[in-house]
Image (tube, rainbow, N blue to C red; front, side):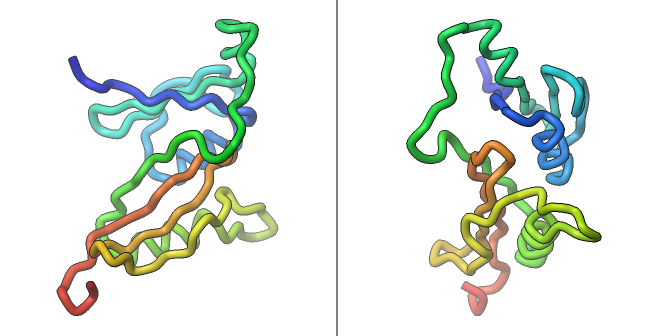
Length: 138
């Protein structure tokens, strides 16, 4: 047995596809206009389903409330990549809205990582991190 996929229910498939595409996941099925979309990241898949798909499976389903429901963590490899990814996703550009919301701006965490927290279009938290290289940076 192995963990094969993580599934996220989205209220806005086009925004969710844009967000997860911006995190360099490979789109392998579906897309902005599809009710079900799949991304790949190595051997793990990220699945997106619209709320309508969820309601077709469980007509009594309701969107969870009361804080973030889950979080994903992306290893950005370097502290600089954490900062640039955060900036790219939260800044918007040329009149475009930001792709992600700011939860916590990048900081050097006491556990030895450069860390930032953003939110996807459905307010799920997404962590961006990288190990700090030298002991002087920690």
